[in-house]
Image (tube, rainbow, N blue to C red; front, side):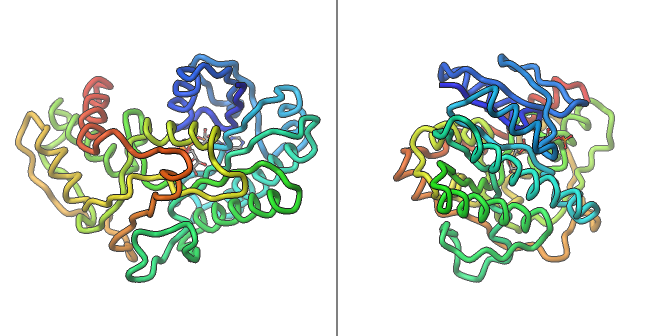
Length: 312
Ligand code: A2R
């Protein structure tokens, strides 16, 4: 099998390259001109805002399956740069869809990677959230990803294209930027242990319950969906069991080599935090047999080890 990863230089891309290579696939990954990819694959530069280049590259590579990861993936940046977010996540996705539609090869499978954020303001009692739940995006990033999924459905139906849509919930692991909670807590602990920071952990809302899955399980799900997902269908990808952020904090602190005081930082509290976000993952389980295998405790331990070795 030949796989093309569009946007392979990010957090998920590196893990996806490894998982595909382990499965024996030939892999080509794209990145922007100022980025680099070190995995075991061929690398090409591509900005998906260049429709012509996107079409040319897809035709030249002629993959069996495309994983579309390229995105402006930060909610915070999406508030500051809404046009850029819409350009990359919506226009960029249309460029990819059009390139696949017009490709010489008519049997390319395309996986569009969206987000659990698309569900947005979840009504009470809706958890675990099924794929059929109405989308009520609460931020610009989420709205663009909801749009990406809708476009995927439209292209699949109108042009009989082989498109599978994914809504991935919180994922974490070594190498993730410390703007996400598990990586943030682990990095703070590593800094404190190294004596680079006061022994005080700065935290936000600890009562919110979120569904955390290891990135290595997430990319295994993407590989299985590429193989067994039903064309035109949308899949939640997550553990299906939310835990309070307090539990993440307690687990991380239990691994610390030094005592740490916890302090709530008002700057880390969000105005409208949704109390529980938990997906129904029965569809992916039924269609592919996938379920998360790595415990959240293991993800935290591995992420802490990563930050310790990174010498922060
Ligand atoms: O923003 P950068 O410079 O880190 O580059 C990102 C890249 N990217 C693009 N690639 C091609 N053409 C563009 N116009 C363009 N703009 C940005 O896509 C980055 O290297 C990659 C996305 O990786 P991350 O932001 O690290 O996301 P992650 O965690 O790997 O998530 C993968 C997918 C995304 O679609 C998320 O929205 C979804 O999973 O949850």
